[in-house]
Length: 135
Image: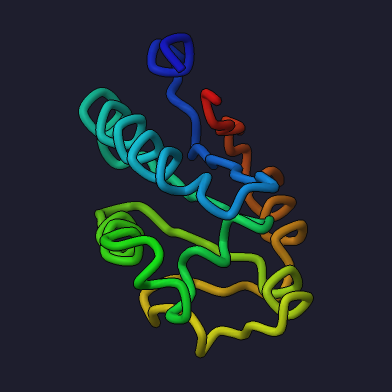
């Protein structure tokens, strides 16, 4: 992360990839993503950043799980509403667990394929940071 902040010229954008088998992983990873994004925005203003969640952890952001993870949906929405930040959820994975875009807050972008979204950002020259829980 520190090396990325010193890149000259700065990256066109940065994507944070999140995939974890634990449904509760976003409790730790969304605040970490926000911390990194805020650091990057302070050092590299105007740089676009994307957070892509594409595994079981995204279920925690569904309306059905709101009571199980108090404040997590609000945190995800606040992240998605930051300047130059997009938060994408994998629609293909959501469909595998019988969820669709209507099961999530409308501010979160449920994309048909996280792989295609990742590849689009990669083609634009975005740097990749993979976020994993500390535990």
